[in-house]
Image (cartoon, rainbow, N blue to C red; front, side, top):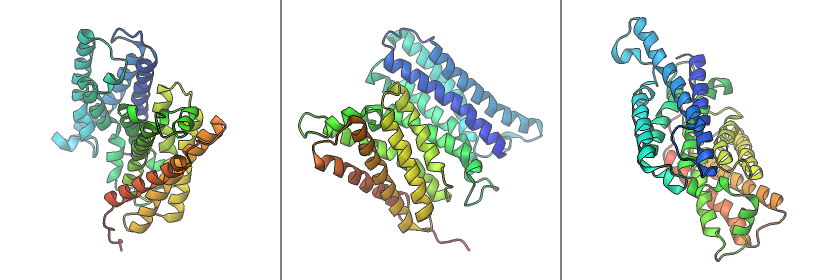
Length: 333
């Protein structure tokens, strides 16, 4: 597919993803929801209809051009195409589930079988531009930011879906005062919950970046764009009452871009790849603690917690780097 077609697919996926963010906000903040038929669901499902129609249209154009069978499906679009009827089936199941059993408003929403089916099929649909770009003949090893943008948008929105369904361990939903208070005591303070949430959120943020860094030499700005998209979901769930925390994550993405340009990690440069994974994670969560402390007006009282948490995140990042790239790929001639 052309980069323009992939960009349109990604932008329709934005509609789809933003519809889910609005629906997540409604489920989190409006306890009086009693029906499946809401404005939030309307935005969500029309987003699905638009992106599904666009993908089907690309296949139909190839059929009209004389291609048959799988040859009519653009490269990278097959999984998204197969996910369309599956998503529709799970959507119908979700409507029946809500009609019979009611509307979930707490943590049970994240474990509903119909919701899990929707989220998996949605992941396949919105990551279509990533799969299209992965082996595109024109993209090369060092793509420009514009050429890689559709893939970045698709993968970043996929990360937002993961953060939504792991929101019971999402450090990006904490308010600055909650962060400082949690790390100000070791008993009955929520320190363990915040520490675990930092580890989970660290993986959600860093894993997509490491995946891309194995495939391409990422242009400056790629990580910042991805992190800026990822914080939209926790922002919607908290009604953007924790803006300093969200900005700290975006700042971490900017530091990641600087490290990417300096270290130049790639599949051929394993040491640089591992160093980037550890240092970028440590920097992101150091900024997280710093921004929260400035907003709250003080540092947490337990120094071991607020100094050690970013180091733990960096070690987890290093471990992720080792798992993503255990052996360096031979350099190309």
